Length: 129
Image (cartoon, rainbow, N blue to C red):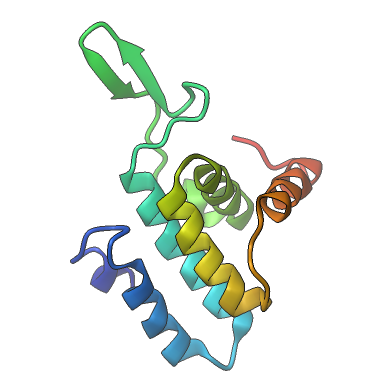
C-alpha cells in the first residue's frame, strides 16, 4: 500500500488511498487504523511541520531539518501516533485526514479535545520524541 501512496502527492489523495485500505481491511478495524496512521504520517512528514523548532530549525538563509526520522523511528506506533496527533494540531489538512480515519475506525468525529486527550495518554505512557 505504501508504494502506491508514494506515486501521488502525500496529502491531496489521502482519502483515495485510505479508501483502498477500508476496502481491503474492512474486517479488521485495528489494521485499518494502523494503515491509515501510516498513510497520515507520510502526509504529515511531507508538510515539514515544525513543533517548537524541534523538527525544523531556522538559519539566516532559511529553514533546515534538524532531524530526519526514518521509517525505523516510526515503527513504534506510539511515536508515529504522537507525530500524527501533534501534526494535526498544526495543520488543518492533517486534522481533516485524521478525522477521516477516526470517524471510520472509532465511529465518532475527532474533536480538538479528543486530540488533546490522545496526546496526553501517549505522554502518560512515556511517549515523547
